[in-house]
Image (cartoon, rainbow, N blue to C red; front, side):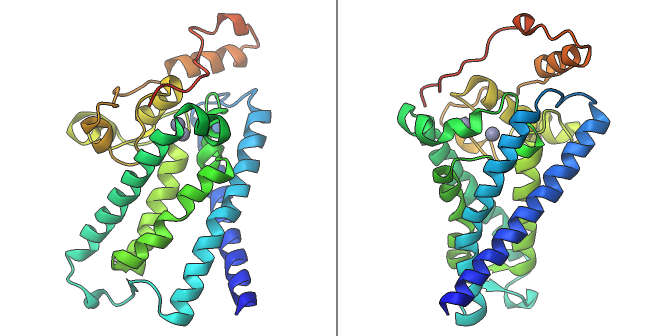
Amino acid sequence: MILALILSAIAMTLIIGVRYLIVSGAFAWATGRRHPGLYRGLDPQMKREIAWSLASAAIYGIPAGIVAWGWHNRGWTLLYDRVSDYPLWWLPVSVFLVLFAHDTWFYWTHRWMHRPKPFRMAHAVHHASKPPTAWAAMAFHPIEALSGAVVIPLLVFVIPLHTGALCFVLAVMTVMGVTNHMGWEVFPRFMWRGPLGNWLITASHHQRHHEQYGCNYGLYFRFWDRICGTDRGLGDFVRDHARAARRHGGAGDRSAVGPHRRDEPGAA
Ligand SMILES: [Zn+2]
Ligand SMILES: [Zn+2]
């Protein structure tokens, strides 16, 4: 049994690690096509992002592997695979509930991690990316990775979820984690501007978090930021793109790089 558990955790780690390399790699490649030179000069940072992300894959893989083992062998979790087991309307509702619960957990733990001590101990790793790239999606200190790793494995015990819906949630999680750090907006304008953009988080929103720290803590939705007064609207990519253009031109004049970023965490 112990061996089966270990094998399940290793399998999950490999799946999560390979998924990360494929998705981040694809979006990094797309970035090179769409904004050539945007990541130029960031090679040492990207190496760090990849190393931290692969370490996170192992931390994500352990609880996921244990729960996957229990699901297969002990009937754990409320996962189901016959759509007819629950009413059809439950499919979208369950997806929304899982995303909202994940967002809620992320908002409050993330806000807590911006307090000085946990920031120095853990969250500084994620903010060491300036500006983050598509490889920063899972670049977290192990403490932060652990806080994220337990969410979905616990939620499948309390929210009945179709296995297809679970795959959809994991796909949303992966794509948003990568695209929010990519340095440009891949989604159509209506998704991040206008009524929908008032509630959904995409790269422009998370960009402002990486610029200003003490705001925009959410993951998928702006709900908690809005009701807690921590939403400072959308950022833009003008400064990062201008800096990349200067690197591209070989000017290399770092003193001319606009207002300096604040390195200290904002008060949460
Ligand atoms: Zn943060
Ligand atoms: Zn981030």
